[in-house]
Length: 370
Ligand SMILES: [Zn+2]
Ligand SMILES: [Zn+2]
Image 1 (tube, rainbow, N blue to C red):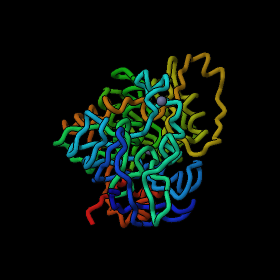
Image 2: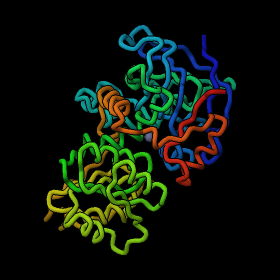
Image 3: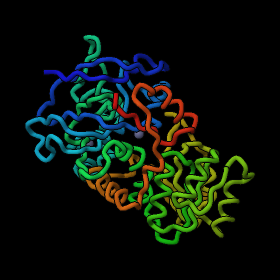
């Protein structure tokens, strides 16, 4: 018996999303059906809508879902009906990265997350009698129900407010994990974060947890700088107001910077980061704006300072461990993700996309009350 759902469908690149009825097939043995409580909007959803990533259409986007399990396949085992789950990225489970508990670098990451279909090319979801891409990031959670694989559902404690936890599945684990898992700055080291969106502000919160000092947020939007200061940044600057951003950062840090996290993907910022880092400095590259962005880096700076430049996907996270850890921090008041969130009803999905794109909302979450 298929499940009747309401989904936000992207019919063609560049078009607004439209709510429509859909039918979702029953879970296979390794799948579960989740009644969605909330889904965050992440930059990647906008990127696909604008055609900058090669995902198929028609497609149901949404990859920061969370909710309650309503049906499980026979082989799911450790997740049961009525469990609360956060949905995260999909991985194959059998490649060398997956076997090393490093699923963010799954060899099939692109196909399984951007491809819109299951690994075997099928989809569980039909709209108006036609199959649509219903497995974006293994979840397609701009919908009242999502059919997901056991591998991309993470069970979380039942006392946490499940409707606001979805962004932990992508944007928030990306920012926090870049600091805590990938760059691992020491207490007291200087940390600079480029960009004060959901990813950057999560990095700020993580840098505060570590005890970095100073923590400098570079962000053009004034309200985001102000929030960054409340969440743990010790200094917030507008990069557009600085003549030489590298020189300014070195001045603020009393020499070269220890750790920089770039969430912007802007080549000029990445080039500035290489100049600003000190001896043994580390640069984490998290943001990507287009498939063909190129940066020109000073070879002598990288060599002479012994720099580490690390690309980071999904915060180098093993979600099954890292997401419950972040939930515990949130519940203890140490990772106040609620400060990033604004709620929109699913009927306002296009307004929510626009708010995120303009910077008016940091982390919109769509809810499904109506
Ligand atoms: Zn894999
Ligand atoms: Zn994302």
